[in-house]
Length: 123
Ligand code: 5GP
Image (cartoon, rainbow, N blue to C red; front, side, top):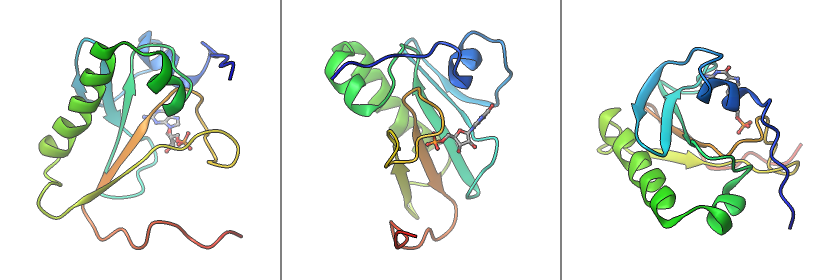
């Protein structure tokens, strides 16, 4: 698989500071910020700072340090946002079938209300 990273995507612009964001957490390799169109009371996007298109790209090419930092940051966001007790959902959309809008790896951390079943029936 060849991954082509578009450095004009909106999250790349956020990482370069060209577009503002509501930051929840920033570490050496990871940024977490609130989704601009929240789907739940808690809706935080967690992204690596490196140029990875999607989860499988990151899993293949990221360093161990990036992967550890990203994973721990997701957990820290759950803690800071207070969703550990009542639960939450993490989603990472990829590609066309996954309906990925922004081609820079991100996980959605969703919580703060009952989230229903995982998937809706296909239209
Ligand atoms: P995807 O469909 O790629 O998994 O999700 C992309 C997410 O990025 C969407 O939930 C969308 O609301 C969010 N988003 C798109 N543009 C911006 C932006 O400029 N700022 C922030 N904070 N979120 C954005």
